Amino acid sequence: MYRFSRAIYRELACEITEDPHGFGALTNHERVLRACEAAIERLATDRHYFARPARTLFCDIRPYFSISAQPRVLHVIERYLTCADEFLKRQPQNGHDIYGNPLQCRATTRKGTRCQRMPLPHHGYCPSHQHLAETELEALAA
Ligand SMILES: [Zn+2]
Image (cartoon, rainbow, N blue to C red; front, side, top):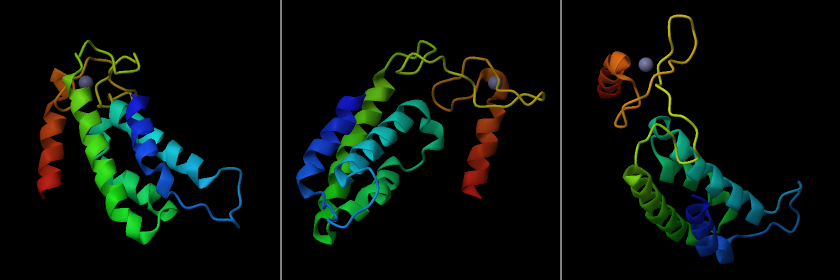
């Protein structure tokens, strides 16, 4: 998966501004790379709760670019995150995410623990909890 975050970083690296008076252990280059990796990781493991990946990543890293570079930054992010999203959707759903972690239904049981059943790919709930996906859609529409 990190080829996507590396590709975003590589395309944007030459435009990252470094603050000569910056403080902290990380350079802006490292901050941008880490933000790209975090966005890709979230896309791969938490897609249902990651509503606007490109917008989120753009807001995270835009302070490290000049105003004039920002339209291109957004464009690059959108292009690669769309590719990554399509790549993930094409992966076989064999009960594990791309890192090999078992997929779990998004619902919480009455005992307060995560439902252990296998989720359906399109909404992330198991068959017994899929009514929650409908409730969610209604809440979004309202
Ligand atoms: Zn469930």
